[in-house]
View 1 (cartoon, rainbow, N blue to C red):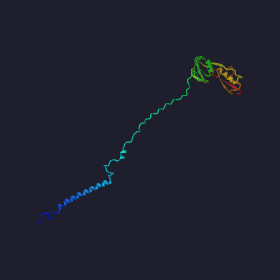
View 2: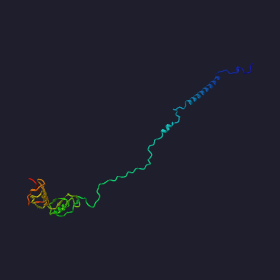
View 3: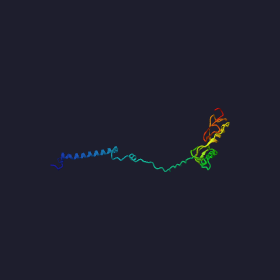
View 4: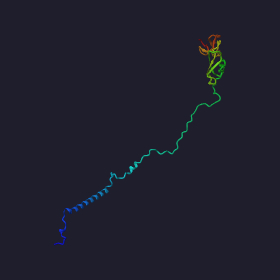
Amino acid sequence: MSDGHTLLDTPEPGPRGRAPLLIGGGLAFVLLATVGATAGWVLAGPDESSPTDPPAASTALTSAPAPTSAAPSSAPPVTVAPTIPRTTAPAASSKPPTGYVTVPDLIGDGFEGVRSDLRDRKLGWRLIFGTGLGEKVERLDPAPGTRVSHGTTVKVYVAGPAPEAEVPDLDDYDCADAAATIVERGFYPRYRTGRVGKVRSQDPEPDVTRHWNDEVAISCGGEE
């Protein structure tokens, strides 16, 4: 007889009795593993390679776009004054400079008078005869009104042909005087032996008729 609390009342371990023990032990193991893993993560710190980590500050700084142009300057623009050209042109004057003369208007005058006028103005002349009639001047070159320097030779165009003239007697003339006389008579002198001394001979001979602009050769100061 028993009071109902004997060892026989304790269920014997069996398959059904071991199941709660196995489940309880498994839960304890899982809990301990979870606590251990959590503690290990806290001690080790966050993983740098984790994709959930926030971006570094340096990355944010370097990603800012660089300025593409400099800020406009507030300085005013520099203005360069234009260069004033220099000139060497002489000042205007109502009088021609010394050494210059204006070719006179002698168109229509006789060529001998034109020659004298040009000579008085310290200008040279060259008579150019034509094939027409008369001794009138038809054209001057340089033209009348042109300002030229003293000594300029003016070409005098005569309408008709060169007239005849008589060759002077130049015997015993000084060579320079003989040349002036030849020019005055309308001829041109040609020197055979120089231009110093007395005239020893001439060609053509005196009193021979020739035409204006013909040559008269003279020998002065020595043997021919």
